[in-house]
Length: 257
Image (cartoon, rainbow, N blue to C red; front, side, top):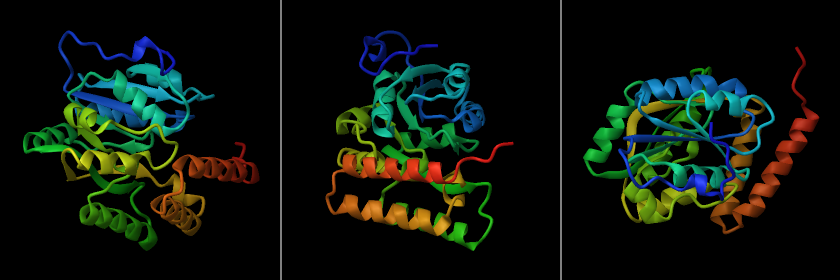
């Protein structure tokens, strides 16, 4: 296991030797309940030669130990933007796949990614679906809304497993070191230098975020997105978002078994 701060030479990409086809980059923070299943499915979907890089933001549970069984573990400043950026800087693969710790890649992902890049896509994403499968109309409408937005505006969020060729990633400057909306900013940047292709295959993202309060979660996300679109600094939004999460965690502590 490699555990190194994000600003050390350990993150410099090797220049020599054969390069893997895929590099899987997974940002984590206290994800022991989700990570093993996610990484097992990802290796099955991308093949045993996939380069797996877990970038941890300071987990206090067994996340780092689980991640070390599947690949290389790096430490970085907390926040998906800094973590994804650190992972991409360390990656050596020709196609970079950015996967949330609670998102499952589908079977056949490797073939779909190869085909998209071969046909000229420099970046893209998968279709959005929930795990477990959408239990009622609200969740099905959420899935349809996200996928309609992706097709209509060629945008994506991290829940859709964004991918990019190494050339396109480097050309656009990569993920910004933002605590929030790093995915939106990256997709905007990469679309300026490469064709962005939504894939037909669906990843499955845990519905846990919406189960704590479906409507409240939707409205909160819309408010943050509107503020970001209006030009509010995403660092300020990230601090607000973190405070709200901490307040909700204190108000609704997890049940003891």
